[in-house]
Amino acid sequence: VAKRLEKFKTTIFTQMSSLAIKHGAINLGQGFPNFDGPEFVKEAAIQAIRDGKNQYARGYGIPDLNSAVADRFKKETGLTVDPEKEVTVTSGCTEAIAATILGLINPGDEVILFAPFYDSYEATLSMAGAKIKSVTLKPPNFSIPIDELKSIVSKNTRAILMNTPHNPTGKMFTRDELNVIASLCIEHDVLVFSDEVYDKLAFEMDHISIASLSGMYDRTVTLNSLGKTFSLTGWKIGWAVAPAHLTWGVRQAHSFLTFATSTPMQYAAATALRAPDSYYEELRRDYIAKKTILVEGLESVGFTVYPSSGTYFVVVDHTPFGLENDVAFCEYLIKEVGVVAIPTSVFYLNPEEGKNLVRFTFCKDEGTLRSAVERMKEKL
Ligand code: GLN
Image 1 (cartoon, protein in one colour):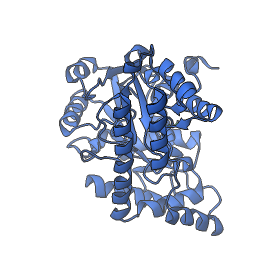
Image 2 (tube, helix red, strand yellow):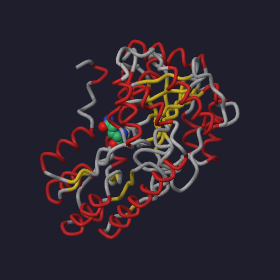
Image 3 (tube, rainbow, N blue to C red):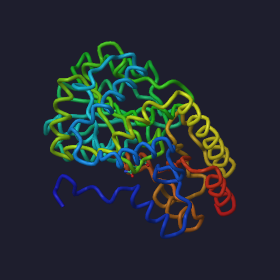
Image 4 (cartoon, rainbow, N blue to C red):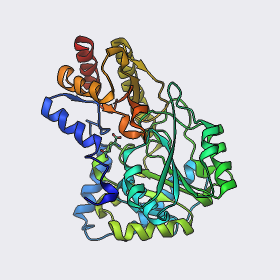
């Protein structure tokens, strides 16, 4: 394997999902729903296939989806963007992240991450030859350590790659925190890449896009996707919204990574994004019920559950159960209890920082969540 990928292993999500299958364990690890996406979106995909929308799409997205993304962005941020020049459709947000990094970061540029961070950030930054720095969000509140953040921004900093609502912790960046990031970026001429794939799964506060803060749109790439909001993680439809001068870099990388994204699924995605508000309200209601079952269940089992404001994840402290670290705990949980969680140490530059924490997801039907809690109550 090439040197730039030598330190990376099979992703933790792949490892844990195959262990779940092998041991017949209930999978509260990898974040994919065990229920299906909405009928009206699936019908739209079937219709597009029947209508012969089956050849290459326009590289940066079918016009209808670019427009639907621009409309949704306007609704959420108040910003008017040009669907033709400022929206790029990609194969999932993971590709949007890769295209953003490969299209806008030079070897040696410094990029700042908030640990724990989603694993693809570090791997893709490594492919781009970037220098990675991180500040750690610590329990119980996972607030941004402002002074530390200020101290690591330097003249070599090219970008801050952030994620709100935040995977794995469920933390949502507050307006005050976003203001600090924004003024640092403006002062030091730094870009922001903002992964907002869980924006519709915001439970305890309103989601704020950093692009909507004064002076920020011009230096921000906002990244999102269809999968989490529409329970269609396997469709791999994502997008990047950015001013034309940044979109150019994203599109250049995208052109040579995947060229274009699945055509019929883009038609269906455009239909999905035009869902009425009631769709999103119902989604949130369902998820609040699931979250309550899991959080109360984990607390009754004896975990310290840290507050999660958004996403479909919660992070807990496993140390009451006496296992030496997160990986050992997750192995025990799979083999002896029959439940899968995700160890968090892989989401830090220094794995030690994650050794007490594991992540559970509640994007599963209520019966599955209850059975997982029952197993833990009996066997932990
Ligand atoms: N985003 C999903 C999670 O955090 C995993 C996606 C993947 O497996 N790469 O669980």
